[in-house]
Image 1 (cartoon, helix red, strand yellow):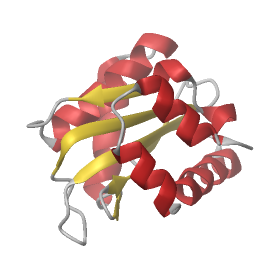
Image 2 (image 1 turned 45 degrees about the vertical axis):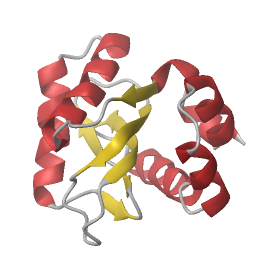
Image 3 (image 1 turned 180 degrees about the vertical axis):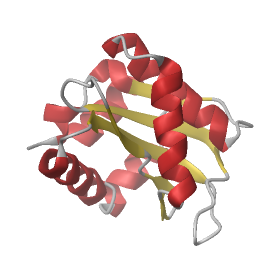
Length: 147
């Protein structure tokens, strides 16, 4: 599995600064709702419920919000870049500016974990992170992630 297998160019979001964690999660849920037909509130609630178990912030300005949702067909990912970052309750107390969100079917154990591992591996590449932070072009962001 590659990033290009789980992310498409249309699922790159560039968000303005000054947003709260809830607003960012709502933007992510909104994006998935438009492409899946699943109720935005259902998606938002699932993301928030997972986040309430513990922050999905990874550190170094990166977060992996994720949830499993009933009636979801296949994996849906969205990559978001937040101008100036957002407080995501990260253990390192750094604002999160890069988010890789994953929504999976309720019964997608192995696929869900494989996709999260793939996304985490992509965000460990310091050169890739530097390139992502240096651009505000969605197409370029997709190219960087798909490499």
